[in-house]
Image 1 (cartoon, one colour):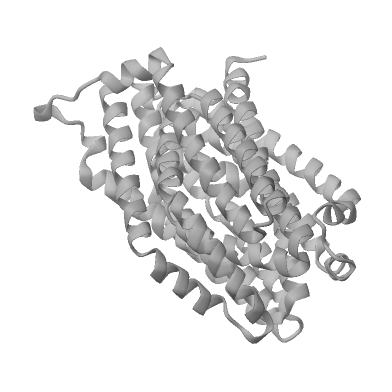
Image 2 (cartoon, rainbow, N blue to C red):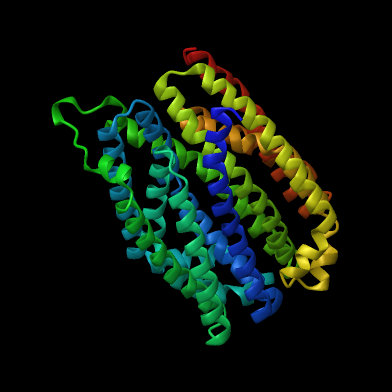
Length: 440
């Protein structure tokens, strides 16, 4: 096995293990909600999740804008730059999370207003309570984003894996304890999440202070008179803004799936929530390879090693394509059993028959988007990501508009499929440009 293959596996396997625990957590939360309150409980969790997708996913720039710059500094062995980027990420995370807490009541009220409709009015009370409790985890979540981005750039995968697994185990345990044993219902799931997130942050701090390489990097100083250009405030903020603008589209697409499905009825909402768990499971598996792409792209560009960069891209393309086919086959064979595990009703399982093939198609053809995003982040080429995701969004909306008169649910899934597939197609020219501009 080549050194590049070993490097990919060293980064991807721990991330795969860590990432799988995230959708499993969503699945278990959905299952707990389903057993506690039936389809209405699943719907309430889906609507509450949409709110936090909007909040937290829009803050993913705290991780994504950091990893590429840190990876390139790591490739140059510039530890002082690595330290500076960590501090800036954490400071920004704290500031944003404090704003979330300051305006938590307004966030809850706006969420209820946006999500309310005649078909799901009974869900909004439970959703509002869920949001008002879970928002207290904001500081832990956002600081974790900044730390994770820094760790990816530093080529460290084991600590993020430990934190993710531990946090999600805590979440499962406390959600079950509060929601079922203590009879708190949906509120218990929210409280379990809050407790778990803060315990996870404590593990981040202990783990980082136990790693000699990380401690050495954190202790480095930058001489003020020669502060590096690649961590200038302008460049750092510009990268964060680009990722924010990109994430707006991603969050809008995912929230639209939930909101428009909710307006069709409770069964359609529960069906969409369950099927999106299929996609999220696939996306977290794909993100393991994307994280490896981020870390290694940054390192190879920092070293100015075009040969290693090209070899890494070829291997990741083959591996991600093969993985997507395997996942699609598993979904095709076991989708109904999977839905039953979530506690979905017979009506939801029957409704899902009509749309499950969209998940199969999206899983089989959208794998490029994930790995290419990782390469772009490692190269810190955030502007191209913004342009392509907005164009893909327009194409997805156009597809949905065409299918709307036929069937609203088909319009949602068709538009989502086009959006995901075109993201990968449109990034190909930018990927070629990165390879061309990196020396051999």
